[in-house]
Image 1 (cartoon, rainbow, N blue to C red):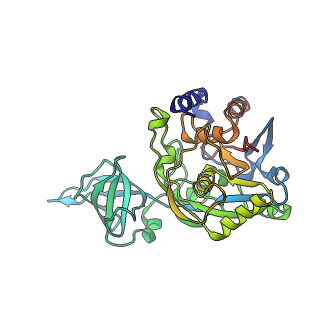
Image 2: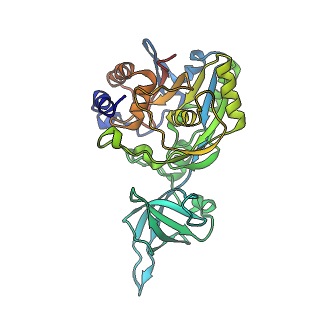
Length: 353
């Protein structure tokens, strides 16, 4: 697809979303959210019915990244008894490839600070040592700050969610039940619908499961504001273990369906795809999946309902086909589905399938 046609596809996929359709709380229990099944036809189900919609031998692939408490209210140091105002810090990730030494993090600061400025995050000192192209600052700590984030930080909720409840409540609710590897600043939200009981029922059904890791960055909230061709994807780290790659490649060889849980899992699998198989290993990805680009690995995708003008909306259109996604979103709007991170879900069939 040419850049012009990608822009046209994004325009055709645009829709008006009333604020009251943005979910502010998750369904309780988690698997009581609605589930739209999108293939040649549309069907309206409930998420706890997922075992009935999958087949024995299907392979579910989860992103087991865990959201870290990366939002910290820092303070400026006092100078001659003056100053000491607050700075909101959103830690993005530890930057290990910039040749600046250990313990350097990229972060968004409000208000911004210049190189050489100091900040105190609780009792932990950081110095601004640089700036990235997108405006993120680079903070150097004297030691590993990760073990201290539970004490000084809060979970970084999406900007469209009214926090309301305490941070302790969100630390449980804005996290998948299978999250293991800390590193994300946003939850891989398709996984929020799963419960331990549902996972047990899927096991009993003969559905296999395996996990990969992609640490979700703040760029997941960044809308496309200009041409699709000019949109810059933020780099995100991913990891596919030998076990996961073997399980995925074996399922594909045996003609069993691979079911990606979330767009982050799709991006991981497609980043690890070498044209013939999924490669084990670690890396960074800026992959941008738009209509016209085949999605090679997963046969089915579990995902939430996404933001107009977003990269994720283009990804699901590439996966299921623009016409099907337009019909599905029209149905979601007319049938009262709840949108975004805490909203309802879709089960999409890969158009090539």
